[in-house]
Length: 210
Image (tube, rainbow, N blue to C red; front, side, top):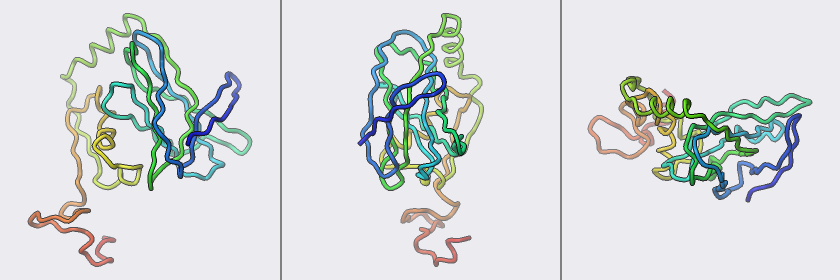
């Protein structure tokens, strides 16, 4: 269940939605009610005084295949102050589209406090530049590596959509290939019949620490 929390900064005031890590909350759809291309920014709160682990904010547009994950590892709070953080999300034509925000739930659930979305209209020149850049795949020569274990400690991974969220940031980038590490070379996190590979649970405990 989401909480409604009123806030006020030096420049604005409003009501944010939030939930602690132990709360399983449903996705929220925010009608944007605009048309044309915009720069999209989101703002969230990372309250250090809650001692509730690092927050995760999952955001997407209504027809995109996966969420974009924002993982705030360190709060900007001080003893006498707390802050909202505004970050860039995407460039997009928002005609007929809504924003969807989601919380990390389950055993590895994280807290989330979503304050607002800011939409900045783009001019024709900016739209041409963005669409031209996205259609040009000649620069997609970078190769990235996703570690075989670390992402399982980030948040829940229960279905294919969760896995898609790990490659979604590369959609309009210069990355042409993703190397996905299954595990640790010849060791796996699941029972396997692959010759030369070994399921880690079959090892003695000291061997797991190598």
